[in-house]
Length: 221
Image 1: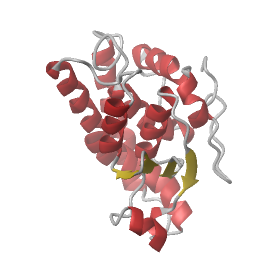
Image 2 (image 1 turned 30 degrees about the vertical axis):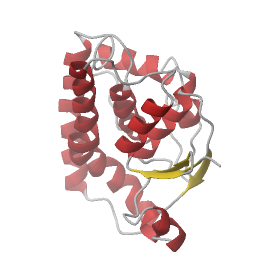
Image 3 (image 1 turned 90 degrees about the horizontal axis):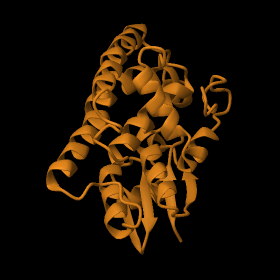
Image 4 (image 1 turned 120 degrees about the vertical axis):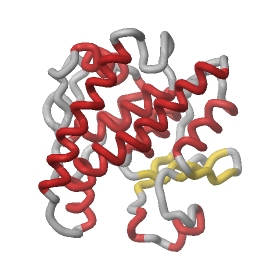
């Protein structure tokens, strides 16, 4: 049985969900709160982190490892380019979002506004929220610069880099923390990617007591 242990507003979980959906690989979604450190989950991943994918008789963890496994084993819809140079650019951008963007933006906005509430670990830190609000402007400007020269983030074809970026931005869009008026290039790119069938599950996510803004699931913004 194919199972994905995930957290709905985890950008790393969403990235894997997007890849699975794009490749039309059906899985059972199992919501996991990793901070609870359930023994059954720790046996799957001692790091106590989502996502964890059970597929092909394997138990895979770490979103990058999972996504590259899926692209190698299910290559009909490729999300990594053919040439080493192009693959290097995709990996650079995936790392940009999963490391730099995550540290500077996602942790400061999503985790302060949402994760603390879910975990009941205190109130949001205003200084961190301000830091994240300022940092996202820089990242949106960088995306604007890339998309001024490219159709997709890493080049002429949609790749894993686009899903990595969209995973983070979709989480932040759920809490209305993305200024889509800052760049028409970025807004048009996101409208294209969230209009893909693979995005339907992401746009259908609903957290109890936390409604997304009206434009969240609007394909035309």
